[in-house]
Image (cartoon, rainbow, N blue to C red; front, side):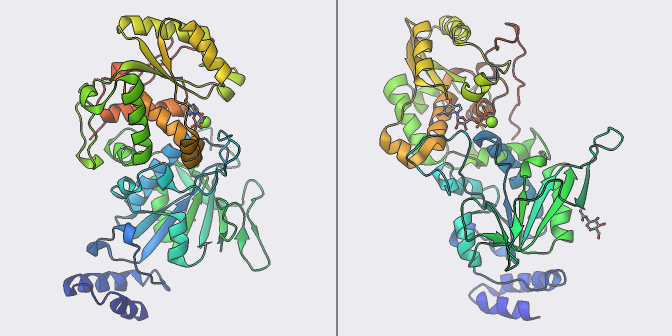
Length: 444
Ligand SMILES: Nc1nc2c(ncn2[C@@H]2O[C@H](COP(=O)(O)OP(=O)(O)O)[C@@H](O)[C@H]2O)c(=O)[nH]1
Ligand SMILES: *[C@@H]1O[C@H](CO)[C@@H](O)[C@H](O)[C@H]1NC(C)=O
Ligand SMILES: [Mg+2]
């Protein structure tokens, strides 16, 4: 039992009772894991005594074409996979650095290798499942090596008998992989812009199912210490809309500096503060369970007008600016409000047009000072927009936009009445009484 001997050494400072506990676990584990390397748990891993099993690392990535807000949803699926894996082993989720997103078009800044802490509160994530940034993972393992790169794909032949059923098989890759083995036997390719990173092994896995279905595969079929699940958007939520879904979502809090900037904007321009608006934030999300309808929100309407590719592709959910303005005015009158906050990816010219249509009302949009933009980049500015939208008395979003969906959720977590949240513009290609968005109640 070489493994337990060195564990004993590394952990000699740990209390005897705990020691016995995990020597037993190591003995059980070493039947399946031959050569677990050892390393001291990183300070931020929040290792608890009881879970002192060898760490295993789950990395993941998403189809490069996907946007920021779908990626946030994929995070939740993988976080809950790690939660499930943790029932058996000591898994840590490695956060895939942000970068190279299609919508992040601002020049003069390198929007790559961005740690999660720029956008999210990593301590909050850690209260749901243990997470580390990729750079810390590289420090812990000493190199950017990933033992197994598992590339998820569909079944080449499609559904069997035209019927969708859960299944999973290791298969030939449907498409020639962009990850290629070099002369040293290392698979090289896009690892978030870290040229030193590589995989030792690469395989394709055809799958129809949810993220949790990968658990047996990761515990029984694969014994490697670090596994990367690529194209993780392929797998679905295990329990959409249930309590563990919401726990993952609640843990996905925006970084404090971004919330602070949004709050300052609310105070300065929108006469909005948490105490007046009844939207208090507790430090620990696990203690936050506001009753639906308790939040009042600031004296403004917020809208999310998704333009750019949505408008260019003539998606039927996109409303013309005059149509959107008509909807906004109607609501402002109904709610006896004067101010509207507009979050949008539209160019300045379209915002100006909208302002003309909204003459007589106060129209605000967030334009970041240079320092904020440089530090938080396009992703951070988008979060500030979302945060301000989340605190409005009433919200109107864009149909089918994940940017809008994340605002819906944020407002649910603050305790708004669903009627003040789940609203959207009807697109020009839709009737004026188009279907409202589906409502998802928070389950605590
Ligand atoms: N700042 C800001 N950016 C936006 C807004 N709407 C869209 N974007 C940008 O465009 C991207 C849209 O992609 P995504 O997050 O996938 O949302 P979706 O495409 O609307 O489902 C966002 O991530 C932002 O980078 C907005 O209201 N404000
Ligand atoms: C995992 O291992 C089991 C048992 O050896 C095997 O039946 C199954 O096909 C494997 N799954 C995959 C996806 O390789
Ligand atoms: Mg998108």
